[in-house]
Structure formats: C-alpha cells, structure tokens
Length: 172
Ligand SMILES: Nc1nc2c(ncn2[C@@H]2O[C@H](COP(=O)(O)OP(=O)(O)OP(=O)(O)O)[C@@H](O)[C@H]2O)c(=O)[nH]1
Ligand SMILES: [Zn+2]
Image 1 (cartoon, rainbow, N blue to C red):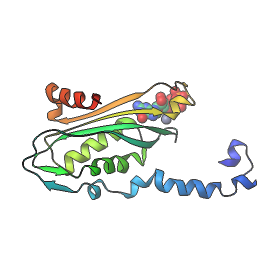
Image 2: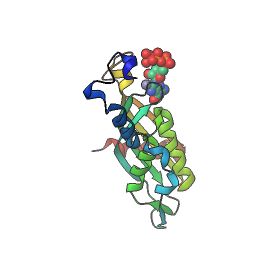
Image 3: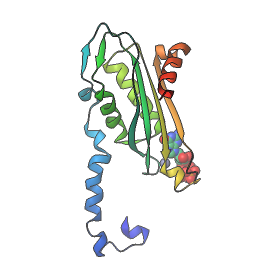
Image 4: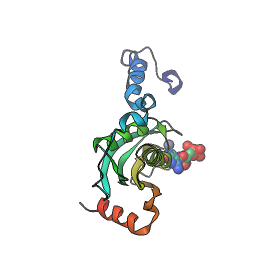
C-alpha cells in the first residue's frame, strides 16, 4: 500500500507503519471478536414499564466502501418487557457493531435487531447521526453534511411512542 501511493516503505518513518496499522485494527475492528449477547446482561425489573433511553453515545466506525472513518452519535431507546439492561450495556453494544466495516443504515439496524433478539423489549428505536470522511475529505467533499439514519422496531412504529423518544433525545 505504501509503495502503491508512491512513498518509500523503507524510509525510517514508515518502517514500523504496517505493524502500527495492524495494531490499530485490533481496536478499530475489535467488534468482530465480540458477540452482542456477551455484552447484553439483562435483569428482571417488573416495575419498570416506561421508556429507557441512552442518548448521544459517541462512536467511531469504518465505511465498508472506502475504508474511511465515519463517526458521530447514536441514541437508543427501548420499552422494557419486564427485563432491563445495565445502562452501560447499550454503549457496549454500540462498540460491538461500530468496530467493524459498516454502512450507517446497517449499524443502526444491527443495534436495534440485537436488542429485539436478546432483550425482547416491546420495541426499540435507534437514531444515528454521523459525518463520513469519504464524503468530507474526498468524493463530493461536503464537510458539513451529516447523515441521519434510524431503525424502528415494535411499538416505536406508533407515532406517539416515536414522538416521546424524539422529544427526549432532542431535549438537553
Ligand atoms: N447509504 C450509505 N452510503 C454510504 C455510506 N458510506 C459511504 N457511502 C456511499 O457509498 C457510495 C459508494 O458509491 P460508489 O459510486 O460505488 O463509489 P465512489 O465512486 O467512491 O462514490 P463517491 O463517494 O460519490 O465518489 C458513495 O455514495 C458513498 O457516499 C453509508 O454508511 N451509507
Ligand atoms: Zn465511504
């Protein structure tokens, strides 16, 4: 790759670069080694029947088309069906799916679908806002453009439930 771009792989500054890149991939692509169910420890809390939200979870992911970073925030809401999660587990789930090659639509859907599967709530909604380096620094070069995607499952398809979630995540 270094030779391909026209640089000299043998010059001092680049000699350890292949090793550094592979080492950085342990973090950047660490999600392949993690199973979503391994972070989704749930417990029974029968009295909790209101919406649970963790908003503005920062993430870094990698675009599968260009191998470029895309990054931003993800907000997740669910309506419990007797079981709830430790709140950090929602952020851990974001790590599992963002630390892979992704497109933003699938990242949002992966999070929603794994919560539906392993937590079995009445519904889930995920909203993801991100900047794509492949859109900012190359290609169409629109550095202010923000992509917004959502994944809506179960009762969040009802406008009033979706509206409550959107009100909460828009509030400061
Ligand atoms: N839907 C979606 N598209 C993405 C995402 N990340 C990158 N892309 C787009 O993937 C597309 C790939 O298009 P191609 O025409 O195959 O590749 P390209 O010639 O590099 O396209 P340009 O980026 O327009 O220069 C581009 O439009 C990217 O903006 C993503 O998360 N979701
Ligand atoms: Zn891209």
